[in-house]
Structures are given as structure tokens and as C-alpha cells.
Image (cartoon, rainbow, N blue to C red):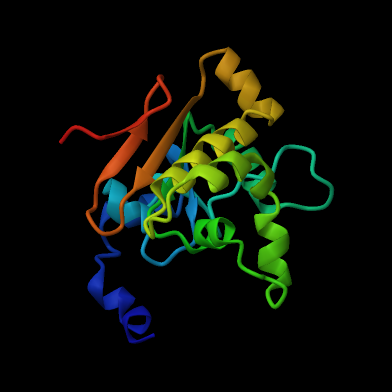
Length: 197
């Protein structure tokens, strides 16, 4: 709270950079990641204010297109494409993910019905990975498999498909290692590799 109260004194709001932000936002990418407090998109990417549009939720889950009811995820994806015109979407999973850990361990989530209902969206597509992944607390196979599945869910959105077909959109799968800072990128061959420095 104290840092929020002193924010104005720590930032040069008289600079042209912040005045330009008041005119509108023109982010380069939509960054879909977990709401985990250890995953900070601007810190990972070095982005400045206004450069990335963020969508964060438990487990960086993208509900498939057409699910009944309102969805903040669907609204954010739609807005990023139709209004902001982003040309890149990054789905970034991470190590030591609590959501993926709950799926892997099969935890009883009856005391957390909202979490349970939310994770049910990702569970079916991860079944084979959940059964075969080793019991590793960093959960790389599960989190990376989830990134692949969420990219597939993104492709179910008509606006995403249309832009992919016309070359106006690129999808990227990333895996961030919390304890090392390494960022792995999904290659065309389906493997995750560390970004070259």
C-alpha cells in the first residue's frame, strides 16, 4: 500500500511516455499467463507500460470458444484482436504452478468449488500427461502440456483462426522457470527450448 501511495513520486509523469499512454494503448502482444504472484509478464519480457495486454488466471487457461455464459477470457481475447489489433499472442505457463499441481496430485477441491470448476476446463485435455508425468514439484511436463492445450483452445476462436489463416497473427508457447529465470519457447517440433541469450 505504501508503494502505491508514493507511486506518483517515484515516476516521472511529466515525461512524454506517460502523457502518450493517456491517448490510448497500442500493445504489441496479448500475454496469457497464470495469476501466480511469481510470474510478472513485464519483468520477464522487459515491457514498458502499454506494450503488452495481459490476461491472467489460475493455470493460464483459455476456455474453448462458445462455452455458455460470460467469460472474461473470451472478452479479453476478442478485445485484443478486434480493437487493439495485436499480432502476437503468448501463452506462458510456469514451473511450480499450483493449478497444475492440484491437477497432477488429484487434490480434493470440494472446499474450493470455484477452483475445481475452473480446473475442470483444463483437466480432460491433460489426462494423458497427468498420468505419465513424473512427480516433480516443478511440473515441467504438465505445465508445458497445458500450454500446448491452451494454444489449441485459442485456435477454436474464429477471430484467431481467421488471423492465423491470413498471416496476421502468430501464436507462441512459453514456459517460465520460476527458480532459474529461464524462458523456454515451444518449437515447431513440439519441444520446448530455452530462448537463446
